[in-house]
Length: 101
Image (tube, rainbow, N blue to C red; front, side, top):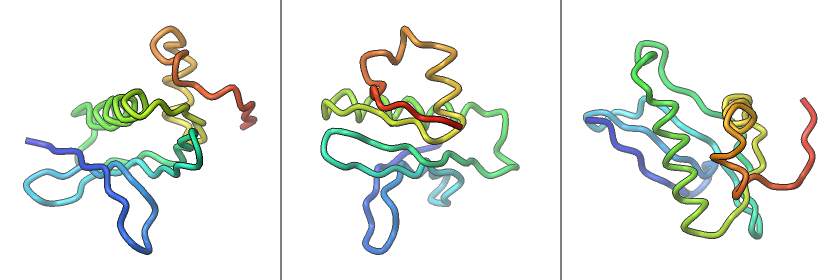
């Protein structure tokens, strides 16, 4: 059973880390400044593709953001795409900052 932990380890970027049987198999790299969380990158090990893990990381991040009254700056292409595809699901947490890719 996969488990996601939000970790802020010394000398490491903050991340939602995805573990399966104690082994890290994915991550969503983030940074919190003030009331904004910038999401930089989401990645799941190639051999774990198709299991919905990226979506689980997204949902964990969204839950954390809502619980902590933050806004998201989606620099990560996966998160940016999901926010664009489902604007009604994420309009309450999407930052007004304009981001160009």
